[in-house]
Image 1 (cartoon, rainbow, N blue to C red):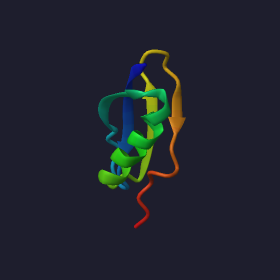
Image 2: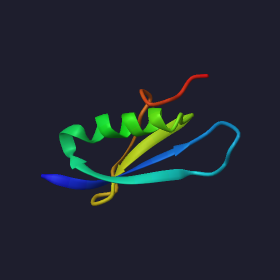
Image 3: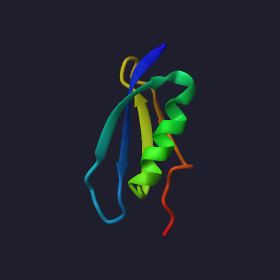
Amino acid sequence: MERHYRVLYGHKGSRETLYIDFVSTAENAQIVAIAIGKGQHATWCAYVDTENGKEEMLWDCIFWD
């Protein structure tokens, strides 16, 4: 079953938190969130299940420069 998620991410030197909403199955949500974070060259990122508020920090999406 598909759910609504939000990827939160930011960049080095910025205090702004950016986000992208997406719909995915629970099994693929982490994969999608990592791809978004890497694609945005995020310094940090996390994803949130917007239906239950569960948040998870993702270390695999961090862009190391």
